[in-house]
Length: 144
Image (cartoon, rainbow, N blue to C red; front, top):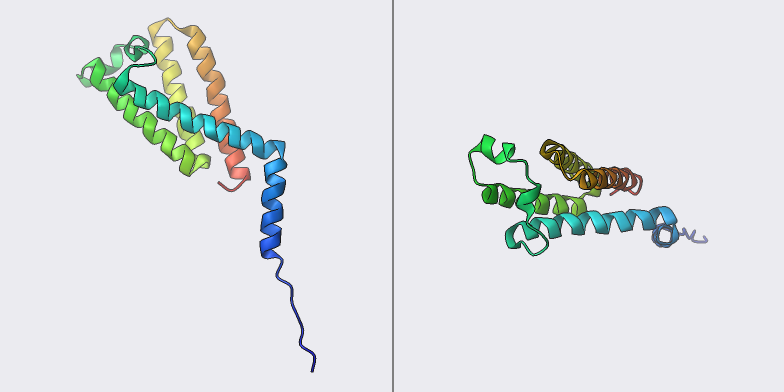
């Protein structure tokens, strides 16, 4: 009796899909957004403790620390922790992290509008918000 041989192409299929994704402009866009929306919150969050990039307190509407009864410095350090956590969520689960960063950027936009200043930065952050939403949608597409 002849033995029937079956061919398991799962491993080859997975490798072929990975190669196809790597060459896909859609997947490349996803990776670019993933890197950017991981790095930016991590760097900005860490800088809330070191102040190398800028004086972050100048971008803060005083109403927020006043409502909580804390100093501006304490508020900005809390912001830094939240931003670091957002970056970690993006890298580990971008389909959720993209929405987290988008919501965070919306909060930043509202804060800047309350200052009646930095409208250019608010507009830039609106563009970043759209990019974060695109990241979340692409992550869903790629099962991440």
